[in-house]
Length: 379
Image (cartoon, rainbow, N blue to C red; front, side, top):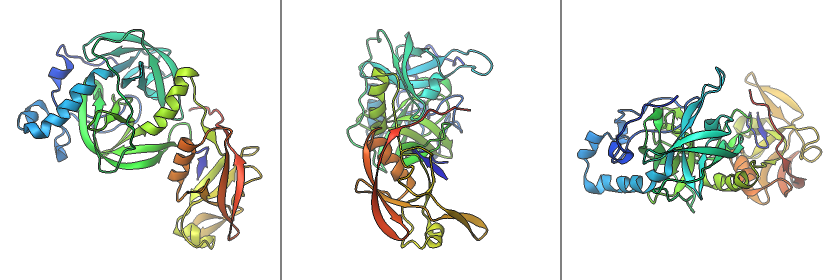
């Protein structure tokens, strides 16, 4: 079952060389120490995704030059984020970040609840940054620095959405190796991923650019150097993920102004409608999401009908009798990923939405008012 609000159930070794001398073209991967990230990108040459300095000597100018140009245009705005340890339960760690509009963006899990962190820039200068806002649900944080080194210009979020097959570069500090870049493509979009909050992180970008611990919070950029997403997790086996620019651009201004961001909350638990569930409920097609739970006194309480029973199909329990959501405000909701993304990117607390459902074999539209997502206690 998935729950919609939406929820679906060290100080690194450094080198005295400058970053650009250390990596002239392409290097390593992305994610963050102490979070999700498996598989090292160091020395990896499979599929041609990572290039060492010796590899780059064999590349043609036309093939390597474009990536090098993007790297040199963006790397001054990418930082190493280090967090001091507090105790055995909070040992500290490192990650990545990047400058946007005179602030530094990174992941919430990178800052680990700290009020201040240390940043190192491409010219080896250090700055102390103040954490001005965090959002656990989107895993984003914003840092403020009093004065930036001269090379810093700031990156911009891309105007266009990421497209499947599009070439991308992931920049950051995998395993503490500074100023690294890895190359890949956008492998998928609109992903809803589980998080420690119990709510999904919606509208995520999937990439095959290598992702390793230490690079969470770094930018995933297109070949124009614009930010498509904020890297936040590596799943291993050639899969990494980034928070989409669309979600980041909704959350970050609020973190700067208010220190927090309020997500829309629908207050229902859902199950995807696959062939088995569709057959058990006499639905015409396996499409949409079934309401299996409604939060008491939540936005959907008394508006949407949850499943009334479970039936066994080949020994597995299948919910029956609940409303099946097929559209919101006229937008089709074919699956839970689309439901999660729509609520995250198109709605806010207080919005009134029209929900089209299949109820007892008939289509009808109900109206509910979204609320603020309630706080959660993290494990």
